[in-house]
Amino acid sequence: MDRISPAERSKIMSKIKAKNTKAEIILRKELWKLGIRGYRIHYNIPGKPDIAFVSKKIAIFIDGDFWHGYLWKYKGMIPPRQYWQDKIEKNMLRDQRINTELKNMGWKVIRIWEHEVLNEMATVVNKLLREIQDRSEN
Image 1 (cartoon, rainbow, N blue to C red):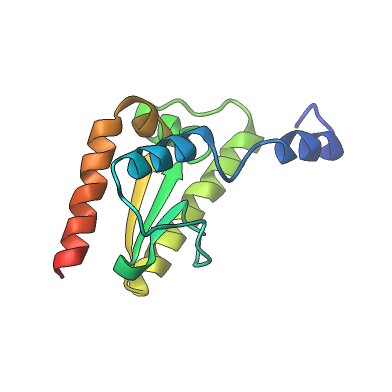
Image 2: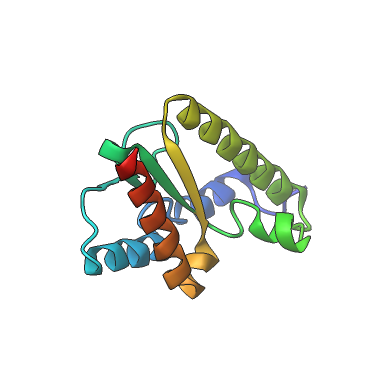
């Protein structure tokens, strides 16, 4: 049982950013600095990817470590409250459904963890450049 009322929980959750997070902005600035253009932000396809290269059909999602279950899946750190377990589980299931839907539409789906953008930018950028190049050749 949650100690916070539904109205208070709603108020708290409404303050959490879903778009233009720190990791998104950092990655977009890095792409811009490297001269990588031609992408759209929050393009209107299933899942509204954070970055979309529409002409190459590449959808990039920058997933928050907590909200999308990185700590849960890879480190075995399951949140103690059932509320958060249910929320994260729904997010993970939605991510899988969106991945499948976009792949069926011919899109390449790339999911990047928030901590990768913040701590391993060179690796992230190299991965994206390879995918963009691969899609350009096909």
